Length: 502
Image (cartoon, rainbow, N blue to C red; front, side, top):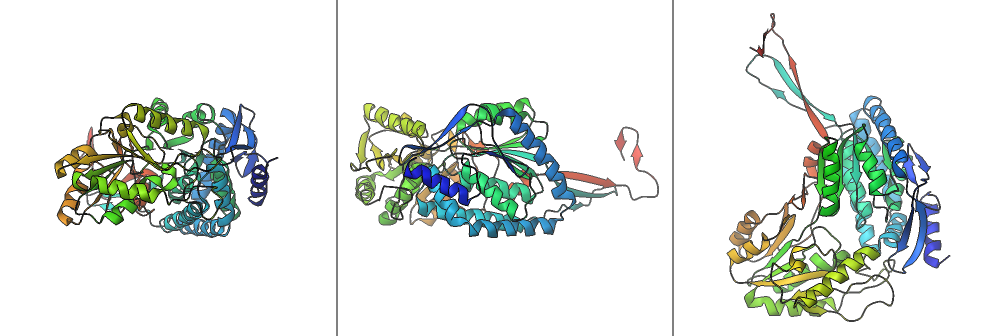
C-alpha cells in the first residue's frame, strides 16, 4: 500500500467510512455489486481504493428510504425544529473541517487551502438555509370572487441530485441544504470519481440529528444508479451539476419520466478588460479567474477580452505573474494550483492545447512542472479569434484564450458570441460602461472589477448551454417547493355554478 493509499484509509477511519466507498442508504453503509470503479490520487497517480458500482437496486432502495424519511421530517419535526437540526449539522461539519478538507484535497486534487475554504462555505450554506426553514410561507390573495384564497409552499417530496468531481463537497452542500430546509428528502449521486466527502458530510449531519434516510448517497455510475434514480417513482425533481453533454442526457431521461430539472452546466465566460482599468488589479483578477482550481470551474474566466491598446501589456503582466504561482502536492500548505482532477480530463485539456497550437495559437506558459501528477501549467493562448474551438469549447483547465477588441460594442459582441450564458466580468473605471455591459452581456452572474465572488444568499445559474434554474439564494426555495392555491367559500350560499366559478 502506498503512503497516499494509507492516508486515504486513515482519513476514512476518522470519518467513520468503510475501507472502500459505499453507498449511504437509510443511515447504513451499503456495498454495491456492480462493475469496479477506481479512485486515483491525481497527484501521485496511485490507486487509493477500488469499489463496486451500487447499481439500480441500491438506487431504488435509496429513493424509498428518502420518501419514508421525508414524511417523518415533515410530520414529526416542525419547521423551527428542522432549522435547529440543520444548525447542529453545520456545527458538526465545522468541527470535522480539517479531516474533510484533507480528504477532499487527496481525492479531488484541490489545494488544501481551497478545500478548507469550501468546507467553511458548506457550513455557511447549512446555516443560511437553516434560517429559512421556518419562513417558507404563502400569501393571502384578495381574489374578486369573495373566496378566502391563500397559498402554501409545499416540499416536492424526494429530489435526486447529481454533483461533479471538480468540487464534490461544495456542490453537495450547495444542493442538499436548500432541499432539506424546504422539507424534501434527497438522493444524491456524487461523481463516481469523488464520492467519499459527500458520504462523510451526510454521516456527520446524521450524527448531529438529521434523520437517517433523509439524505442518501449513491456511490455509483450514471448509466446504472443515476438512470434508475431518475426513473424512480418517488423522485419528483432532478438537479444536475456538470457538463452540457451529460446534462443533456439527464434532461432527456427526466423528460421521458415527465420530471422537472435544474441544470447547472458549463460556461465559456468572458473576462473583459478596458484600457482605463487598473491593469495590476485586472491581471491579478484574470489569473484568479482562470488559474485557481486549475481552471476546473464552470465560471472560470476562460476568454480574456482585452482592449487593443493594453492587450500586449496585460498579457505580459499575466505571463510574468503565472510563473510565480506554486504548483504542487494538494496537501502541501504552499500549493496554489493542484493537478487536473482525473486522467480523462487531463487528456481532454492537453488535447485541446495541442489542437489550438496546430490551428495557429501562440502559447504563453510556464515550463517547470512537478515531477508527478496530472499537471497542466497556467497557459495563455493568443493569436486565435472568437470562432476557434479553444474559444468556443469549455476546456475546463488552466487555459485562457486572449482576444483583443477595439470598441465597447466589439467587446459585447465577442462576449455574447458563444452558446453559453453563465458568467462574465468587466474591468473599467467608467461606471456607466460597467452598468451597460452588465445589462448587455448574457450571463446569470456578472462581476464589475472583480471575479468569482459568489455567496449562498445570491442566485446562481445560467442560460442556453449553461443550463437553467437557480440553485442558491431565495430562488432555490422556489426550485425546491411547489405552490398550492387553497380556496375557501366563506359565503352563506355556494358560489359554484355549473361549468365555472361565479
